[in-house]
Length: 285
Image (cartoon, rainbow, N blue to C red; front, side, top):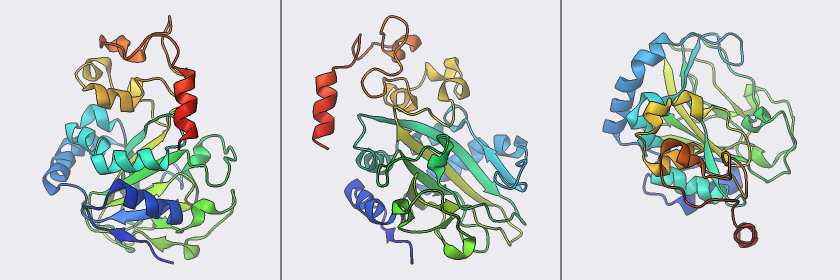
């Protein structure tokens, strides 16, 4: 059992192909080093102001800092990375559209214990989605090197096709070791968990995840990103954040208006979505 690694020029088709088989894959050195350095500078004050977790799952020696779109212009580029967005579009192609689900720096401190092995899609009230039907596609950007010793995320390749609610131990997993700037892709059905940090340093990852647009987002983007900031963001990023209809008719405002109009932008269309168009697109996936 091992994690496949792909080069940073891998296509979304290639990345999605491995995800279909293994549920996880590392793309080596995908992040521009300069962009990653800028991100660290922008987010560091917020990270230092974040409290440690309150329980073993969130990590009592772990800081989890969100609202990255509001706090870091560099994070906005990471959210819209073409390889990432292209891969997510293929993994979640069975849905009409997808959206940003969560942005969070996860800084696992020295002495942190290993996290329980879990599926991220359990956040949806532990609903038993059909096996093989993915509702999330996730990325974890290595802002520091990830090693087995410093808390590299533990994964079980292929477990996205396992039955639900199975209990696993860390001995059943392998560490997603990768160099700084590399990105771990994994699906919401993959069994995984944060590793134990047995070093004196902090392991920092940037968790940016996406879900099908007919499900609720884990991080409320409309409140995490103040309106005065949202009004300055480009339309594609706003659409990704959720200023768009989900599927056929979800998320409109008042008189069937496009939600992006709330920011003073021109709508794509008014009224319900075209149901025949939606049905046609889904039948072709």
